[in-house]
Amino acid sequence: MKQVITKVLLSALFIAIFASVQVFAGNESLAHAVDLHSNEAIVYSRTCTGTYKYIWGHNSVHSDQGVWFVAETYVNGEWIEDEHARVHIQAGDAFDETSTYVYTSTHTWRLKVDPFWYHTGCTATGYIRNK
Image (cartoon, rainbow, N blue to C red):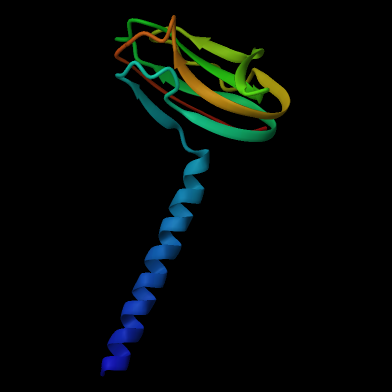
């Protein structure tokens, strides 16, 4: 009886671990909501390799600032923004998912507030994915 209980518990543990791994992997393709209620300049970051597409959901109509989704590269000990790999989203705007491709090798993508990284109180949803 003890062996049966042990097997059942181990099976349940294995299933729980497998399910959590699947959920984590699946979340790569989902929109990532970001609540910009801090003075943090960088509130979302993801490093990507290859050709990626900006995908945006929505920037709250109640926002008092726009937001930037920018790409940066770490060069000689500092982060350099790629002027050609960024999108500005005004308050209340949704971004067109069918355009704006960025052709690059490796970038770290960061969601930033605009301008000067002030507290904005806005909420934005967005993510990037492979083309």
